[in-house]
Length: 428
Image (cartoon, rainbow, N blue to C red; front, side, top):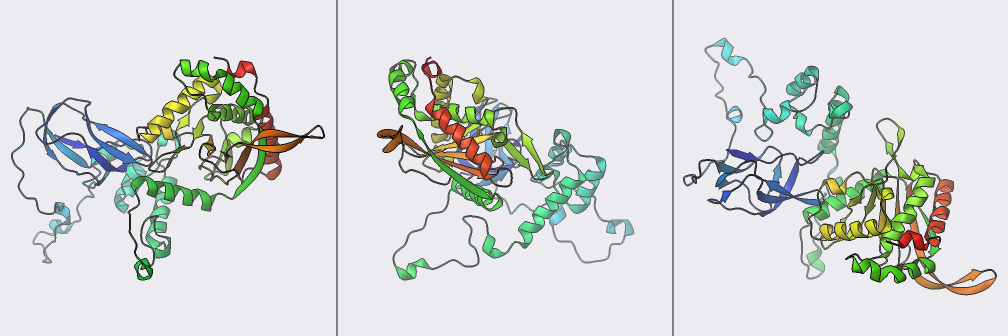
């Protein structure tokens, strides 16, 4: 049987093979991992749909593969396939040259009924939710419905979705060369070697995704960043007194779970910061859930796993989940689903160093909080100068949705939340 790459999730229809975990002749079981695929910022295991013997592997590490593409051939009878003959370039029959002679039978001149692309079989297209009129138009245009994002109820594809998909294709087709995708040559490649020795390193799939996302986020969202500082001396004393209790249960108590708690307190007072802008309808979508993204610095680049329903979790539970998701992100074991659905993002650079910075909003969210390294500073309290441990805060927000006054009120309440932690908040 042909084993084809399944669709990995919403919007996930391709990826790069990072490792192949079986070889030809291996006996495998249903559910066994065949290969690992890098898609967006996640590495996903691809399981076998059945048991059998690997007859032939049709991909190699580094290949970009798409949903519906054959990745290997599996024999269910326990026998390996005979040696493969050298294949010529696979050309669909319909694509082979046709003799330019007039057919004897007039019926032979009639155009053939459109067929599904070999990479995206008709079976996959049949599973797409769309009306007969949409399917008919898609066939006439030669469009693959599995690549069209449906925005109607239940993900159904409407005529408007087809129109938007065509517009996107036109934008790509007619985009100036100077705006080529990140990591790809623009109008010309500069010969830096004429000024001295150089070396080149291709951008990884993850780095290209980050570059594309950051460019989109920065160019489509009008960013404003609000700065402030919070006195975290009392909070850090509480952390120090509870470190041993947390470590006894196998959890490290860092500043990040405290920051999540403080952010949640501010978000509940200012729901606009937990919203998204629906650009298709011009509506602001207020979310009644709190899924907090936590930026993780990995060797490959920035990855942002999401802690779901953070408002329903204790400080201990948040500390545990921050540690677990951070480890999964650094090991590239975080799933695509764990990277989606965030309502607000937190980026903590304090462990590395630096003070204020301007974090880029993680679209479709409308705000992100950046934390720098806490530092002892002279502060005036009741007309006296005291030394306090001050935490730099940087709140970037989407100016289409949020105005400066709202941002100032949010950060005032955020500072207050950082400075008002109590013993009961930390106790396990």
